[in-house]
Amino acid sequence: MARFGKWEVMETIMGTGFIPVFYHPRILTAEKALNACYKAGVRLFEFTNRGDFAHDVFASLEKFAAEKCPGLILGAGTISDPATAALFIQMGANFIVGPNFNPAVAALCNRRLVPYIPGCATVTEAGNAQEAGCDICKLFPADQLGGPSFVKA
Image (cartoon, rainbow, N blue to C red; front, side):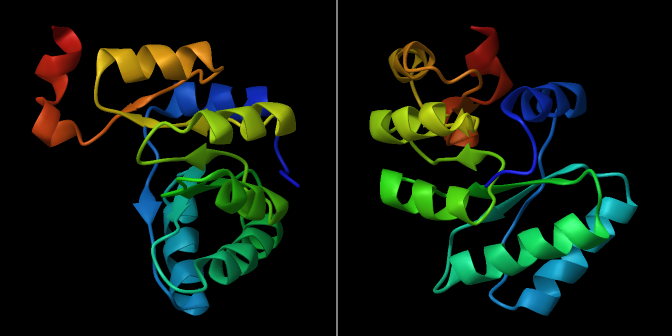
């Protein structure tokens, strides 16, 4: 269960403007990275689902954050399907980030009041994500799409 409410997460994202993204298979290494970011003032952190047993590392990291990093909002990234989103939400993810837009993940996150930030490569994808209740979309893959000039256009 998420420690932070949806709107608290959204306000923090909007006020911060960036979310560090990190993955490591070792819990101790992940804790050290999270703690270093926290000491530097970071209050949002995305742990990515990129390796075997990433969900176990995430669960330990969420417990560590709750105890040692008060106010730090931990989310899960590289989430592409609703089953994986449900698993990470059950382990305490306060937001979900995907490399693509999946309407089923949007529906799950909306039901659980957990922000979902999908990766979108076209205006149509972004529009579909917003229609499905996503308040924020990430331009992905940004470099290949033109980065800031794509958004400006």
